Image (tube, rainbow, N blue to C red; front, side, top):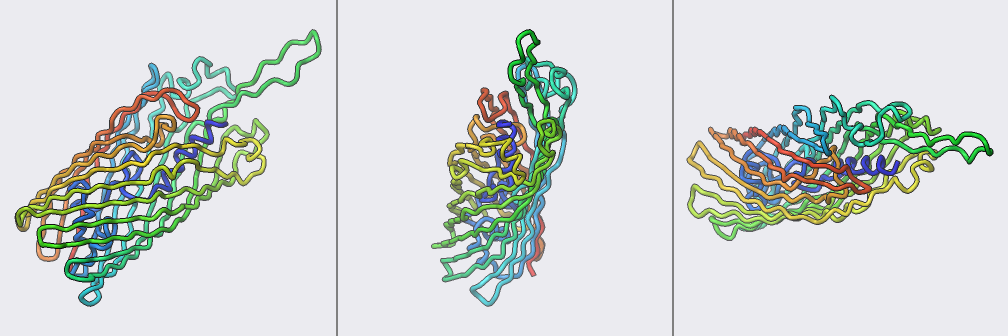
Length: 442
């Protein structure tokens, strides 16, 4: 039961991680095909409608009403190996995107409204064939040794987080800009996996002469966690342009908590005298995010950007899972809390843009270290150190801007030894992300 609750909680984190531009198989690294194709190094530039996301101060640079939308389409591929057992993910597309509108009010104020799917990923595993995953996990026990016998389970997660961000930006002077947004976060996901098993001890020793009764291995069967909830926070930005060839920006996103509620269902937990379903609540912190960037124009047509982005991941140290059924509370005990030991991490990003006039070429790179240690890794929330490369192009005609991009995230393989809180084995992941953005200046 301890492993069961902890694995639930690891996946539950994905809903709450809405504090910034995180990859690691969970959250998006940014929005707008233009910004993303420059490696997401956009905090010091932030001169289009996606500034609502990257640096709200940059919105004050817009002089015309602008509407824009961006679509990102994640195509992850992952392998998991445990001894001789190997499993692959199903081919599945996870969509995400941003919708934004900015409206100048006079010469110095711009207001905006953005809505973006900060989290948009999951995992759907092909758990078929012989052996199946559960058979590998229970070795050396045979599946028939359990009550009821162990059979293949569905291993699947779908994670989403939508943020609504009303924004205001002010041009204090021609060189100095400030901005802020209020972030309304709605998180949701559904997780399905095997519920592990419980070793039920035999009754007290029988009278002399009677046979001993062996312990019972109770297969808990399929389990489902389905939770949704709200959280609130804010983003503050500053942008300084001391000369036409340089701009410097910084963004601070506050910590917030997403309060999640829903149900936990375990197929065979009634064999332990508990109801199959319990209402469930969780409070998950969205860690603080701080980013700084610079944009340089060595020549008129070329822009070079560099960002350093830091996340206070260490706030994710312990998460509690609150069951509303008192019998579940007694049955789970202290196992309904999780020690994560995540570490603070920084991303390094850089990008280039060359403007030919009506046509633009872009490229970028970033390094994104995994915050999760081996001790908390499992197949439904893959956490990897990524090297990511991007390329893109843009076209403009009058007020219409069309941008295309593709991103390829190369996860470093992880080989994980057995601990109390994880799934041991070797993990591999790569993610392909095609993107398209459209915007129009009125």
